[in-house]
Length: 330
Image 1: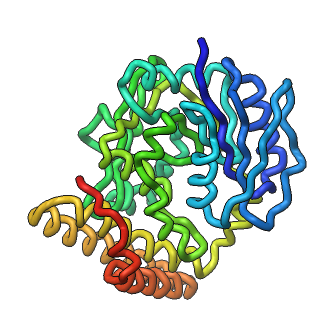
Image 2: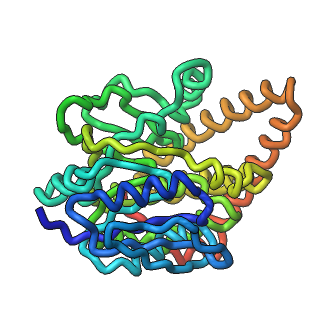
């Protein structure tokens, strides 16, 4: 089987052994990619690890920001199809073949393997997520992987048939690893969503990318037997630094995402339901952080930062900068 595809990797060059496992996976892919593009933010050193087996990376630098890196890699790739990865995943040699199949047959424009670690762990936190409508385990929609809720949260299907090759439609994915037609990604015009990088932490970046694709009628499927491992590079997590900017950005990005992709993409009834759903989510999230704050005052600060993000999000959607963005049709 011949597939005209490029591999595009986003990294800060510090994932070490995990990054090497990704490179090893790429070396073994059948068929081989036309090129391997590695995108780093400006000012970062190249990773020490290198690919082998006759392949050679092309290293590129983009503006700092997860969205900027992703867009730059997509723009620079020369192939018809793209395997887009973060620096901490691994997969088997037939991974691309499985992901290409629904795209080749015209079923979808974007495909990915199932990632169960993406779903909330079972327990108290999962119960809270269900009640607050931030991440709800679905009772219906058994033919779907993820469905975006009016609250800006999502529902998910944990019961994926991994023993047979099945395609599950989805409205969102973890952006750690996916396969796509390059033109479909270009048509989404993700450059318009650079506001996600505005505050140094691209909260909800993946949800914005894939839900925008869904709203633009670019069908996305999860291939049930296209397994991959997310090794979760702890070095990258340290670099992200769970700090004040993270909680501020999570509030800002969530509000702008909700307004742009949910509230603004439907009629009057949609707007009413969307507002009530967001208020419901905010109330429960606030109560949760306040209760956590009884034992740890840090959660009170987190709550204030998230609210500050919401307020700045409201200001942003009324700014001239936002009004220049293209409207998204639902």
